[in-house]
Length: 220
Ligand code: ADP
Ligand code: 5GP
Image (cartoon, rainbow, N blue to C red; front, side, top):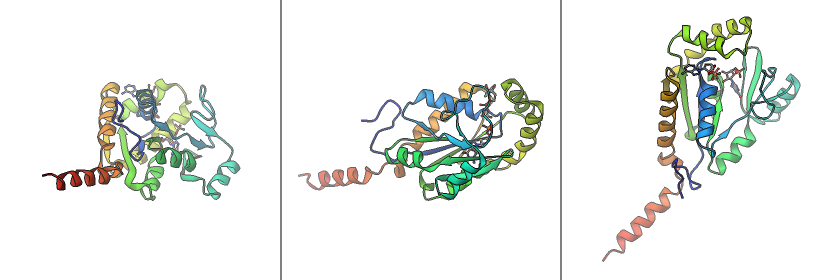
């Protein structure tokens, strides 16, 4: 039976990709979506970057060194991977396949390079990609500063890379300007609820249509 959010076990899972320049708010929005729908699975990325204060291994990221990361790539265990801000980041394939096969949606907080790789993969028909823009560059910097997790040098590096990330905005299905957080959250929920009902996400539709057809033909 469909639950309150329109998800049910007789549908394929979506790969929901959130990208944005660092600081635009995608991790905050991802956390809100996870709290909204406990059937969503978050794709915990592997990374070679050091944990930030409060980040938990296996929850926020799987933290590892370069050689462990390269081993996963060589073994074909990554759905996608990229080099971002001097570190490797990648999405392990196995948890994604398991979730999708079980009809669960998977949420990705990844950059444009990862989004492009998934959009070119065999999973492309089930991808929902959303790009989050900041209301202004000044506000982007303020958010990076108020987040308080990076030093001035790292913030400067993230700001310099922000235009590169923003320049890929048109490769996404939806683009949202994250001005008001509650409003952006509401828009994201609307998009996800609608995408879940796309024909490609409902493998049982054909069976239902056949049963309607039989009933129709049996009518006196
Ligand atoms: P990202 O994951 O894109 O790097 P975060 O989610 O970490 O960005 O957000 C960066 C900072 O901006 C955080 O302190 C967050 O609370 C804040 N933030 C996110 N969205 C908004 C918004 N719409 N208005 C004001 N502050 C926001
Ligand atoms: P942060 O260091 O701020 O957590 O992430 C830096 C950037 O790396 C963000 O744009 C984030 O979306 C991206 N990122 C995080 N995990 C992955 C991943 O698995 N693959 C790719 N391609 N990018 C990722």
